[in-house]
Image (tube, rainbow, N blue to C red; front, side, top):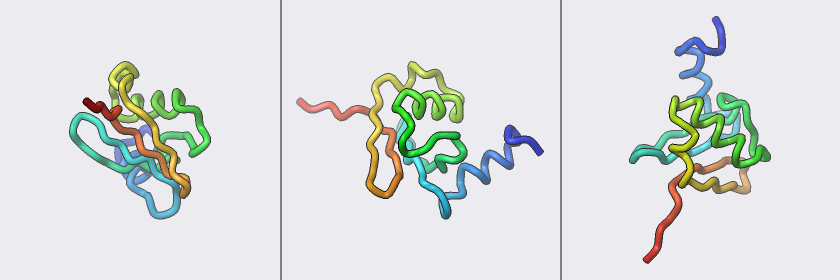
Length: 86
């Protein structure tokens, strides 16, 4: 079974018990993805994280242009839309 097998990807993405996760808010939905499934870690540059997420969710990188990454003390990340005030 390859890492591109849908079942393997699903299980890896949902195994949040042992690894840091990225909480994704995109197109009105929220989900948690294990960083291991994205092949990034808490110290990866924002561009690398966005590239990995875009590939994982089968979206274009441009779809993530107006998102920001928050880094949490526990090693988790949040990728969310930019907040617009006013």
